[in-house]
Figure 1 (cartoon, rainbow, N blue to C red):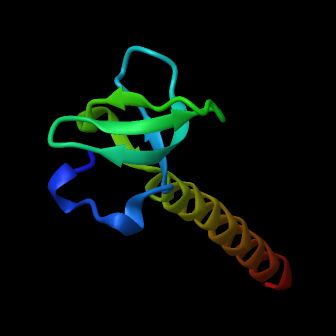
Figure 2 (spheres, rainbow, N blue to C red):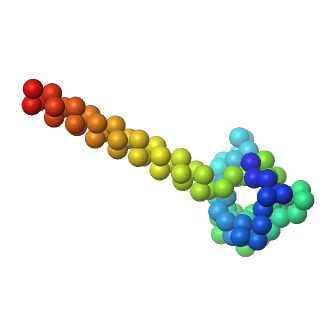
Figure 3 (cartoon, helix red, strand yellow):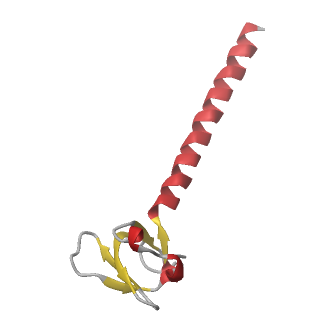
Length: 90
């Protein structure tokens, strides 16, 4: 959820993720907001759509999670290789 009260001018054009748990997840960019809605341009559409803030999160959060998962997979693979190498040498 994005808190409207914490948005500032730097947040305009930030990438967001729409996820209400029902419809398909969509990516878009913040164009503006008021005290109730965040207006988002989805899929390159020039027309902004009013979106409830509880259905949005910043896309960077998703990217951090994805990066962390990929990093964890790499670490596990390297650890497995190290253990296998140690086992072979013994």
